[in-house]
Structure formats: C-alpha cells, structure tokens
Amino acid sequence: MTLLHVHDYGGDGPQLVLLHGYTRSLTDWDASAALLTSGHRVLAVDLPGHGRSPGISPWTTPAVVRHIADTLDAHGVPEAVVVGHSLGGLVAVEYARAHPDRTRAAVNLDGFWWGREYPGAERVSEGLLASAGGIEPPEYIEEQVLNCARFGIPADRAEAAARAAARPLPDGTWQTLPERAEALEIVDELHRLGALGVTAWLDGVDCPLLLVQAGRRLPPAPGMEWFGEFRARFARGVFDELAALSRTRSTVSVDRIDATHPMIMETPETVATLVAGFVRGLPD
Image 1 (cartoon, rainbow, N blue to C red):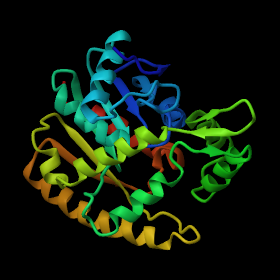
Image 2 (cartoon, rainbow, N blue to C red):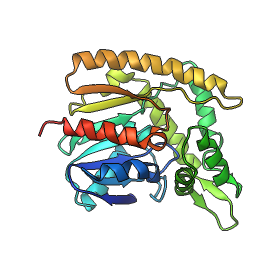
Image 3 (cartoon, rainbow, N blue to C red):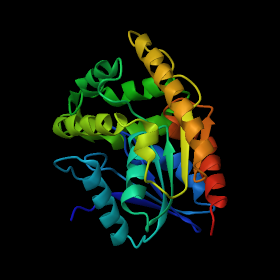
C-alpha cells in the first residue's frame, strides 16, 4: 500500500478532495481551499511522484486511483466530491469511474487532453518532457515567480507553489518533479485517455460531473506563440463535445471560467465559488 501526502485544510460540511496538475503540488490549492473551508471539509492530495508523495512505477491511472482510495481510507474519508485541476481533473473523473460508491460527484477543471495523433501533439509532448526530472539552477524559484506574474498570480502565492512542486538539493539547485521516468509514463497515460475523445472517455461515469474549461487563452511566451493556437483549436473542439454531451446527459454540467489554464492560482475566488455552488446543487 502506498499512502500519499495530504494536507487537511479542515472545515465543516460536505467532504472535498482536491487534486492538482502535472508538475504541480497540492499547494496550488491553498488559496481556493481557504475559501472552501467555510462550507466544506477540505483535504488535498499530492499525486504520486509530485510534491511530497512517493513515486510509483509504473505510473498508471488505475494505480493512482487505487493509492488515492487507500490514502482517503487512512484519513477516514469514505465518500467525497473529488475536484481536480488539469491532470488532477482527469484523475478525478477516473476515480469516479473506479469508485462510484465513494464519489458523490466529480469536478474536472480544464483537465482535457488530446491523442498522440492530434495535430501538434508530439510537439507539445516534447515541450513537456524537455525538462522533466531535471536539475534547475538556484534561481529556478525566482524564474517561476516571474513566469506566474504573466498570469497575474501574486508573488507570494507563486513562490510557495514553486517551492512545494520541486525538491531542494543540498547545493542550492532544484530537482523538478515528477522524475523523468514517471513523466514519460504520465504523458503516455494522458495520450491514452485523450485518444478516446471527451464523449467516449466520459462514457460509464454516472455520478454528477462538472466539466469546466478555461475561458481565456494563455498569454504568449516568446517562441511559444504556436502553443496558444494549438490550445485554442483543441479547446474549441472540446467545447463542442461538452455542449452536445450536456444536452443528452442530465448528470453532466459544463461551465467556463474567465481565466487561463492555471485558474486555481490565478482566480481562486472564482474557482471556489463555482465548486461550492455545484456542491450545493447536488442531490442529498
């Protein structure tokens, strides 16, 4: 049994379990979680190989889901609304599929992916893996804070999240997480799930689902202008699928947030309001 690192934010009310994105950690949820504790019991989890959780091999979605279930058992959480961002959103849906008896509902915040054959997908994969598990210089954290400033993320929030998502080394450098072997397996899993298409992927998940897209494009980065076009094209296709799905499945709700992809750090108030409203509307 592999138990994952968790942070219990406390609070009273319906149980929420929060999952973060690829290369990130549960600290990304700090601002949103602080707002959600006013009406919920909130627990956040570091995914395997991320933050302070141990790595696993192979890194597969079924294995991750199993470790999350074991971890929640250890913390006395028999049932929850599982809320995930990006990679965590994909895992939240897969958790709901594997444990319908333990999942009151699931929320996927911009956790949609493409198959390996999607035009441009390999180029994105190369970018994701270029620095996976690498050793970064001592100024790495400052660089991450500057990058987050492009999204309007406050420096203190960005610094705490950057430090939690990497491993400090004795010589002052930083080990990025997950390590490369796990990163390769994670990207393979993303492509495997993405290849199904949103509609087919969600087939068989019967609990209430809230599926949320980012409503704004990422700010352009030098040399990465193509990526904005790639994401915008993919997002349009996902939007069309979600709209059709919500018309035919009463358990599926869709929404957009006026934010870019790192929405849980960029607009934590909006995220918390959306999640709390969804949970209030769930059947008893």
